[in-house]
Image (cartoon, rainbow, N blue to C red; front, side):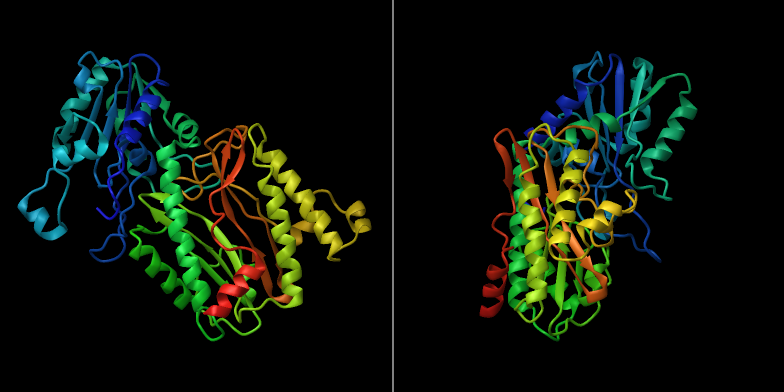
Length: 430
């Protein structure tokens, strides 16, 4: 395993908290992610379903987890099903977990082979009234690909049509939004690795290097520090590319006088960092670039202070948008009179700042969330104001990762350079 074993008490506590929210006489079933075909006889690199990992720590395909808190046989209240390896599989695909290894990782005592799943499933269904299934739910994203969970739900409902089927997703969302200390430590490790990669990039960037060479430097640092790799496709956007919010081609040359915007993060033990920084290619901000860099940084510092217990994402975004609007008036992008007369549905600031400022962070870079839930201790958010001047050919985004606590926000990314003078100083040393 690339990273040290995670304390299995994390997964045991997660299962316990999940089980406590189920109705009586319930069974919940979680499937591993599919292996997704790439081309020919190849699969894309495997990434476990975040919910299954959250409950078991198992990073292996074709795994299934059953949780049935009221099963009359105590040993059957948690069962993990895994692939049974054989010589042929070991030769072609390498090692698969033994039952003992799966027990050690997950803390689940009852581990069975996947070949025994169908027979045992009938026993669980016979004893249960309610069946919790984990069909993919994310409000802002819809995939054309039918997941294993979705296929399983259809099959189960056909086989057992008169059970009460219920959604596991709302429960998982409510749990995953609040991070335990072990999870926070894993996120901090992902951030630490991300910071090392950024410092390496600061010493590497100069006129003439390509965006993909910068990406290679950063990914080298990720892997050398036991990260899984990128938490998401990294954005290394120089010049006009920095005004494209989801630019991922990373294939152009970085030119003297331009800025380069980084939006990147390591994934460590399946937990994500998500950091944005903007730097001058030649190591020195122009006065115009510095003006807008400091604007974004001022907004970010005030925005971080608003990540406190009881606030809401709606109020938070409104605060940041109003602040950004005021700052844009000060630097002359438009006037106070323009603001007074603007179409409220199309405010002027949106020409230069068109995205939200925060999202949950955890096992997924855009982690499980409920935008109507007030901020609570243990939530981890990004804070990422930006400004994009397409007519001038540069964009600036600064993004930190913030833990909400009873005593106020804690910046988990405070060690990653963001002050303009610090960036220039590191780049000057090379």
